[in-house]
Amino acid sequence: MNVDDDQSTYSLATRAVHAGRADLGALGVHAAPLDLSTTYPLPDVDAGGLSYEQLAGGMDCRPGQSPVYARLWNPTVARFEEGLAELENACGAVAFSTGMAALTAVLLGLGMQATSEGDDQRPRVLGLRPLYGGSDHLLATGLAGTRAVFTDPSLPVPQALAAALTPDTRLVLLETPGNPTLDLVDVAAVVEVVRARSPRALVVVDNTFATPVLQNPLSLGADLVLHSATKFLGGHGDAMGGVVAVGADAQPWVARLRQVRALTGALLHPMGAYLLHRGLATLPLRVRQQSENAAAVAAGLSTHPGVEQVFYPGLPGADPSGVVGRQMSGTGSLLAFRVAGGFPAACQVAASLRLVTHAVSLGGVDTLLQHPAALTHRPVADHAKPDAGLLRLSVGLEDPADVLADLVQALDRVQALDRVAVLAHA
Ligand SMILES: *Cc1c(COP(=O)(O)O)cnc(C)c1O
Image 1: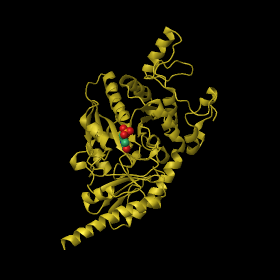
Image 2: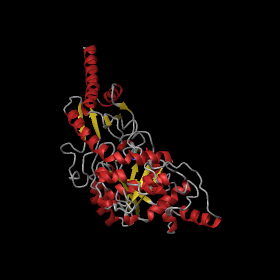
Image 3: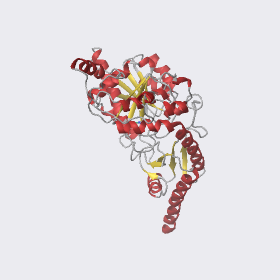
Image 4: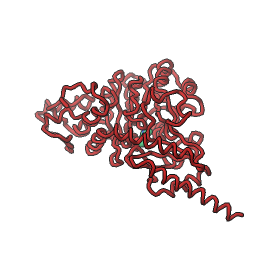
């Protein structure tokens, strides 16, 4: 792809392959170079000092300019950021060591902004529950200097928001599909309510589950999009990372987040950036196929007598606000199901798997199953914790018939053990 080609005219599949590679032709290489330098030669003291000042302040490193020091800039990381920004229709993106580091940087950036505006209040942030357990926990601890409140997950989203938003709310964090029950949230509707009630609030959407392949929150009015790149973007379970994509109206956040990163040092390692950038090329293909596989597994599980309920955006009744098709171009590859027999039965299913791996995380090429209440959502307050019989599944690229057969044998085993227990008592 030519340096000056306007990428936005190409379809997503094309952009996913070529984004962040515009400088390779001039470098005379085909694969993106992995630059592991921690420091860089300086042309002279004046030019070096000026570069330091510009980069530490969050400016872009220009071609030919010395990056000075790897905590300020790394070209391999910058290519991944450019690629992700391209896929999210963002004006820029800033990558971090993990998704949690990315969220922390956003919260610290809020404090930095407040300080620069002479506001000595801790910024009020609102978490729209349900959220990823780690995000919920980070907000609740106040560790990043913010005051957190949460919506009541038992209320419909518009009422829950109306009850919790105040004029001094500075940030609203939401996820859709939600974790772990895959609840869908209408992002444009949330943005409208937030703008009306809390005009100073940033709307931040964690798009880890949907990926830019299925949903572009910035195009729906959100200000920032957050990803745990550890999940789908990398897609192979071998690189941790996080990234924040910035919408055009929130453009100062690109420099602000780079500044936070330079000051706090939560860097994405270039090796990770290399792998995550490579992952972007196959992202559309993986997400589409994994979604198709998940739909087949969800349908199969729905008919099993050992399953009380399946949670999947593609199932009837799962999308009351009509988000699929309008906001989300597919139903994704995550699902959850509640087994009959509660916690002991869920433990038994997890222990009886042969093909599917019992492990946290998601979005990779292989299928993973985990128990949210015991693991990812362990730190969440008791009244907001997922059901003890709930299991979450991230469906991979295996043949869905093999995945379903493994789950069915595990569920059948639980039922068979139940019958043995009943007979033993008789
Ligand atoms: C995993 C995850 C995170 C945290 O990302 P890490 O890379 O593990 O730090 C945040 N949000 C969601 C939705 C996640 O699944």
